Image (cartoon, rainbow, N blue to C red; front, side, top):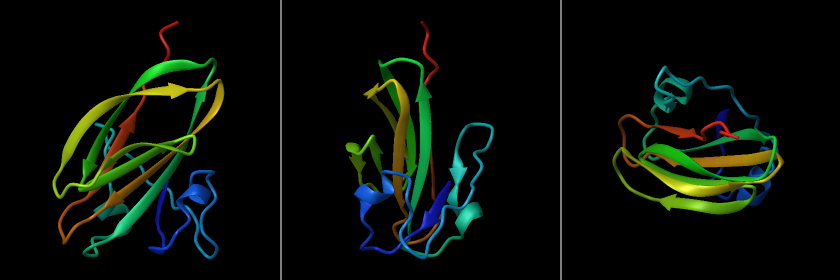
Length: 130
């Protein structure tokens, strides 16, 4: 889910899944490749910021690979800890090692659109193999 929020947002509050007062999460659907097209979901206003929140359930604590695509800038928090800050003005992808705790893991993604054009994101975590 994603939604526009004010620039002075408390990102630590967002990381708990709580939107700022007066705002709500809006559902957004990824395409077949797992990319959420924010221009389609929210519009294409120049110099915009959107946040997405999701919960990842893990049956046990484990190290995993978190893969991402950002178009343009992307910042990711996992369980309140910043794990990525990649403020670029183009589409890019990558992966990083992340640690999931047993139970619910909170994922917060910030995507920034610099100027105008397309924007979106994808974040994925593989299923546990044991």
